[in-house]
Length: 393
Image 1: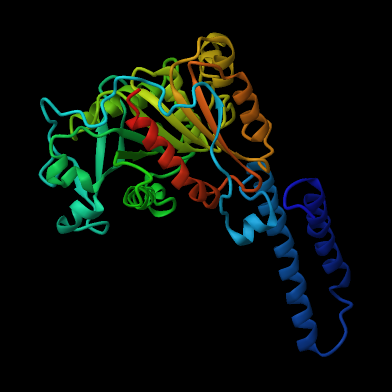
Image 2 (image 1 turned 30 degrees about the vertical axis):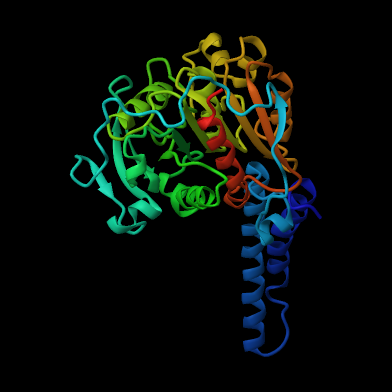
């Protein structure tokens, strides 16, 4: 029986209702010594509680598509898929004229322990290891345009501290969690710095600065990275304020940024590229979606305006507006069945995309909406992003 779908839910619902009814009916009918009757009653109570918990857990999983199969639940995830080119030129990179090792004419202040508002994560690396492991720092990024401010974790690769790269401006990428998410999960659960370091050391990727944060800039509200009329200006913060704040702290390029995220973060990454292609030229969506969600966590994100709603709908944009010159990588599993957030929605976006947009896909046969699936895809995703950020033609 499948982990998802009505049959398992119905079976567990029958147990969740039937076991308490049976317990009540048999409570005074147990036979044997008092100790045996006590054990029987305790076991029946535990089975009732277990059936209720299982029904709730499977119901939540069926709603969120977190685990798509039993093997996904118990065996973790691994990727045997490969990136397939779907739309546009097969050459890496969607923009031209971005130098791979541009010299900084007026270097930005380096992140460091003496910089106000910066906290160094000494558990990742010591100063003696910065040139071999890189450096993690927690910063607070202020947004003068949006009036928002959020914490972020910045990863500076080892090359940032090496003499040969001392005058290099690095490509940068915003890395975003899902909703509600926490930026620490990008380090502790998905291991972005470690995976990037591994891929660079293996020669499959080149160094870049990672700016890890959550897109939930007005908690607990899910803004879906939207400039809400008379509300939080989330898109302005992520698209304009964050790159400007990081440029003031580190040697990063002013344009040619990347974005990558999972779930809501994947939607936001593609949104940044499609709406601000002057800065964000490449984006990776890990099980992201393409239509702004509308539920109790979002409220009215559009101020009642149909135009604002359509402009925040990525499927609408790719169908009705001129395609921006950006490169996208979309990952999804065929087992993710959500009508808005699953495989069908991803295929619809791929079918509508057209040049000069370039779209690649990594479609897995199995996998769920979870860290195990995204973690297995992450090496290929960072390799892809690195190639496109360093492409010059």
